[in-house]
Length: 413
Ligand code: ARG
Image 1 (cartoon, rainbow, N blue to C red):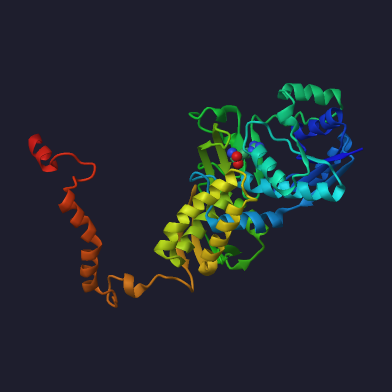
Image 2 (image 1 turned 60 degrees about the vertical axis):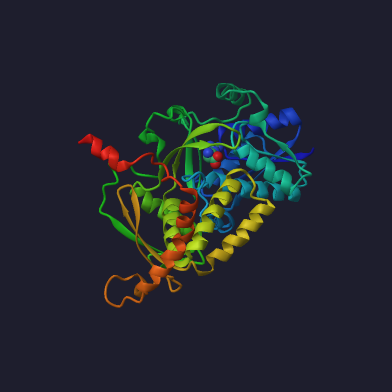
């Protein structure tokens, strides 16, 4: 019989999918469970897949590759979607797609399958990545294809002897990995409703986070974090440590309305303590080591980069181009940043680099000033020259202010 490789999470959707694919498509299912830092019992999930009827259940610990090839490049790029989302889910999708394709080819499968709905971004990210990497593979998306409600699925599961965790009564839809945790659905679908505390797992409430402030030193090499408080550690450990430590301070809660690629606005609650701390620290180090013009240009690159990750274009030529630019910008982004964690806050309190562009002699208002004050005069004259020339030739009105401000003040007396 032909086979399909299913990205298997162990949840209700993909559990039902194992049997549904067998019935609907007559394919043997190989379940592939990928650990990207979801804090689940991966071995137990694989057992469950076999029990439900998968012919094989494979597990891959992809945490180190996730950090190295996806998280760190996104951090170096400063990729944050629409100003708040560090892209945890979006970054894991192209990795999972790649592993699905590799396993499908190794196993001689004719198709791959995933558990995405027809309303989200994830189906786009999976389908576009898979079609780009392996146009030969058919893509099956059971949840998009069947028209079962959650209750229908529970009935289907009962009829087919599929174990369902009755304790899994969470009203939310959650996706999580090392880089962050995303929570949707339930009361959160009301954008006016404050997220209840039970929507947060990684971060302490502000009430609980009333701890003595604490400091962390993060060392970077070429824009990649390599040590915490002077202790070198691998990326997975560093991120896990910061998720716990900053999470205790309630750092990294994000509540936002987000524009999905498929045209819907959705309410998203994220917890991303490590991503929040590391983006903050990385930006601080760049402020010391990149020129004004590099910083300005990179802002545009960052938002393009974030958008392409969000929109499922990881395996694109545009990404290759932007990645090359970003790598070039990181040549001198090495040094240390000191962060202060306090209730809900992550503040930069110090930064240092051997490649720093900061010159005390130029900046100081004290003795030792090396800045040429007289040169400022000539500079200002030329800088303002086109403005004053144009204002005289075209009698430009003052921008955004009609009439005479002084006259308005006078009439009030
Ligand atoms: N809105 C985020 C994104 O599109 C998170 C999606 C979470 N996915 C999920 N299956 N719950 O990347």
